[in-house]
Image (cartoon, rainbow, N blue to C red; front, side, top):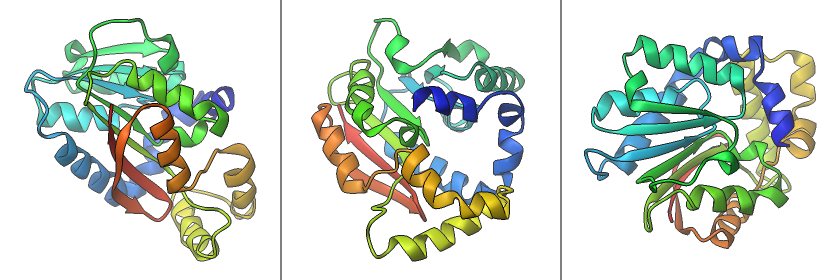
Length: 229
């Protein structure tokens, strides 16, 4: 699952990622705004870990609002990380960010972070690998530090899935999905991605040692939660 996720974000997929998502700005802007509220009580000199940082959208939003925060940005896609590096440089934020090519398991030991983010990442991690993924994030957090995760999440066997999928297809169309890819979307959600129900996700977080998972944002199939290390 992790290797295939890297394939999703190579080459043109990385350089065109922000353009494809531009029409979803109302969703991402609200997510960034609410994430900032969840994390607003962090120290002025907080250190944050961004797992699967992508092109750096969340880091850019938080760094602009909190000039004393510093970030460790890790991503398995070298192409996405290169786009992130360019965006950070253009914003004058490079000196506050450490970029790491790889996954969270490759992070070296060091001072624990005050918070962690994994935005639209977890659904690329197979269900069997999810506890280790969450545990690796928790290992880099101070006790009680917040973890914010956003992922595609739904009970795919629930009666509500069919109407939700209809709306989700409209979201995907805004991103340029073709009729053929929309027809294959149910298979993608079930067989390529690891889309889990909120209840199952919360159970896996608890298995990894996180407490009090709480949903703070829902946009069709995108669920965002915060939990404590």
